[in-house]
Image (cartoon, rainbow, N blue to C red; front, side):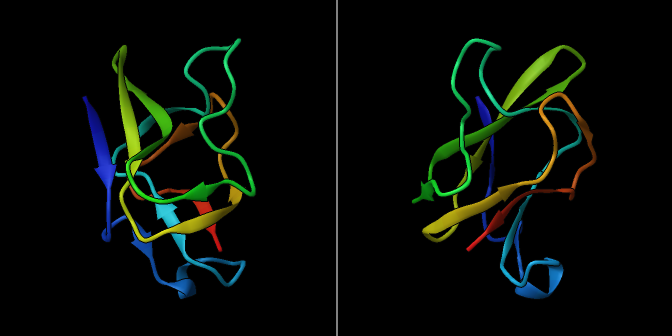
Length: 97
């Protein structure tokens, strides 16, 4: 089961230092950019998001929650947190184009 971030998680262009929209995490915990250390990244710069894609795992008390993108189609410009970094609810995960 996952956590979806829709319109509430995709902020206005003013929220981004790079001038584009951003995708924020709906919950806090430890950010993981891939399903396991030997697997590819969920998303990387240049990837197209169309909605429903898993973009990260957030670990909260040993429970892994899938974070899904449910916004308008967009391209990933940058993944903000480092793999394994702690994030708080509302932190920017992705800068979008």
